[in-house]
Image (cartoon, rainbow, N blue to C red; front, side):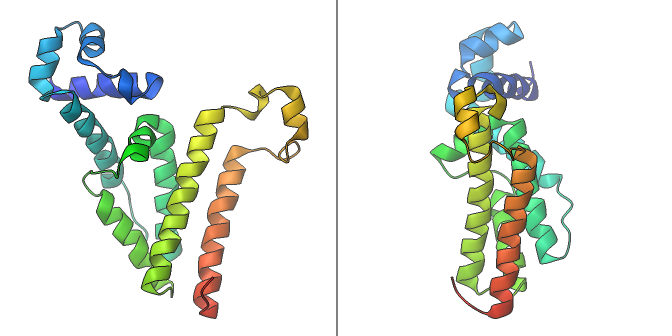
Length: 194
């Protein structure tokens, strides 16, 4: 059994049942091998979980085709992170516990901050603008994954919600990203600090 086959099985388990559900026993049952084989191949459960997150994030980052304009870089980051977290909720789960240590993760953050600086923001503003965009994406995904579909909420809650007439999570995400980036452009143009 290859390390990659074990990582793929671990990703399926974690995406469905959470990162804590990934164990040697569960992986062994899924793959039809012994728990000790999983251990020998992966180097331990903590190493396996780190490798899993690192691989998923590294693959996502390496597949990005970065545009050259600041807005394009920021949008690409936001949509790429959104897609990664929706496809692999285990990455969000791991990210809530600790900073992600994965190939290209820090470089991506620095690339976005640099792009925001090129938009005309000062270093501190660019860093906080990146943080606002990052936090919006992770928060949006966390709520979407945690609450599920709006239609599954009790009827009285749906009717009382501010979103009763306008609830399209995709549109909400697009609007939020555009709002943040328009705010960046406005601050850069006016040279003001919020």
